[in-house]
Amino acid sequence: MSVVAALILSAFVAPVASGADSVPSEKITLDIKTINGSGCPAGTATASADVASDNTSFTVHYTNFTAKAGGGASALDARKNCQINVVVHVPQGFTYAIAEADYRGYAHIESGASALEQANYYFAGTAPTARVRHTFPGPFHGVWRAVDQTDVDELVFAPCGESRNLNINAELRADAGTSSAGSFIEMDSEHASVDTIYHFSWKTC
Image 1: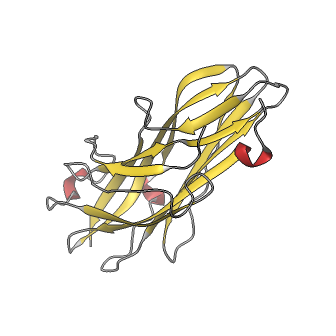
Image 2: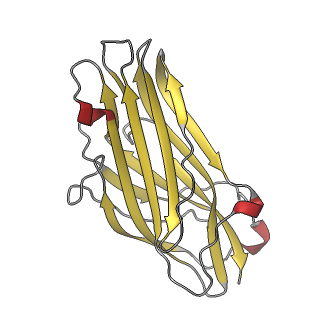
Image 3: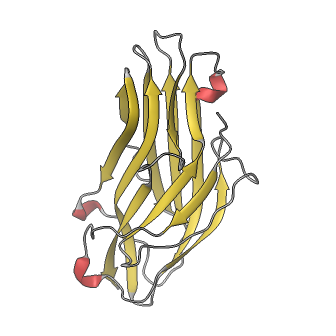
């Protein structure tokens, strides 16, 4: 299964995670500056960007972003990451934080094997958020979901009046464990309901 990733950001209407009284009415836009990582090597991926119509979230679709183990897979196949660098253009007088990230994908995990998803994000010039590990033991076959939520008092907002790129780094791992058969975990837009959704929290400056 190819690990060359095509990364597409598209519209998604979602409930407001927080800060509902300060969501800007002017349309927000995103520009992807770079895409790289072992799951989406630089120069091999294409991307486009858009935001939910109500400015509450944006959605990431990955294609063939896959980690696999067992069944003849190599050690390099077992751990894949994909990092994107995004500029969020916001109206004057507003700033934002990421309040919630909803990760979804597809996996086939044999008995005795396991898989892991973890991700973090940060604004340029700030410390990365903690990686939250989500482990999926086998046997498992189907769509998986993992949600990272940030408490209101721990939200990290982009500095007011400054343009700071948002870096998002997602990682998938597969571990064959005691199984000799092949297992994999992936984020792949070819399967239904596997979008990765980032929910904004807005505030006025």
